[in-house]
Length: 320
Image 1: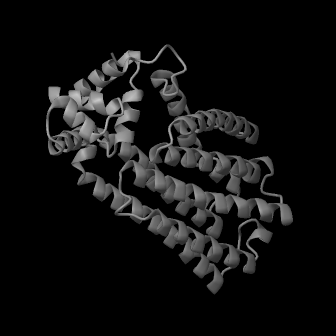
Image 2: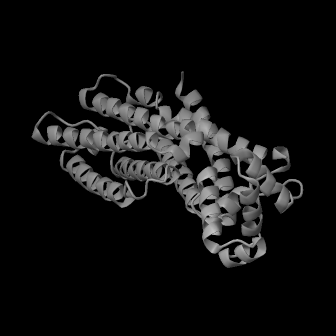
Image 3: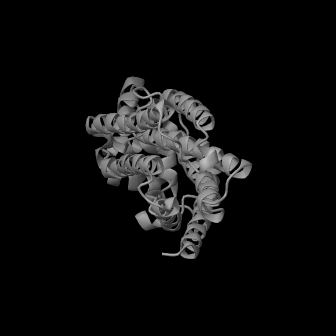
């Protein structure tokens, strides 16, 4: 496949990704919860990385050297680590593992990795020879640093996968979360292959190797999924009028197997009533209200009033 075809495909995917980024930003403006923020950060990080990556490895080509190439490759490397952090953050938030995995640890590991990697690359003249360095101790240290970062990211993914298996509350969505974890693991393995290629010159044209980057396909699929989701579910409620609140609650109750009393509690909760108000309305104790609400959270895989109300607001006429 020629470079022109690569460029055309890459530009088309970036345009598609821009649409997904715009839709994610609009949803984040409308619904300010942690999950939508994590999705927006991930989509934005991937979009920025893909744009800079395209300019660096495709639009310019491997013959470019000097200050421009140094700046572009450096920015691309930094955006790569930011993308990985945003990806891990998305996984941690979606799997509700904030108490098990601290994203700030992943961030600071990435910062230290970039500082060490960039310092060694500059001192070894890696950017002066288009990512190539001569054999020596510095090369071994840089190789070890890159490999350690790959192992760290894969290790975090495997730990998250292990935690996912123990979470019964996420059983309905486990397949979706596996699709978040598996591509990151595969991508980091490909990064290891890319590093190997640059170190040992296994291919004469590194751009041809980079043309096999699985992130391009992943980004295209992600963008198509986001567009499909917005067309199918209409989370921004741009289509026909919204479903009546009581009908939306009935849909949630049917989908998640809520009892009749839990549906009554959810209706009042959705109207903004407090626990004492719900207790007075239904002539039950506040402790009973709390028990019903906890059952609702467990069955609907939510953790707060905001999350369950957001889930109710996303019910569309298609779901009736």
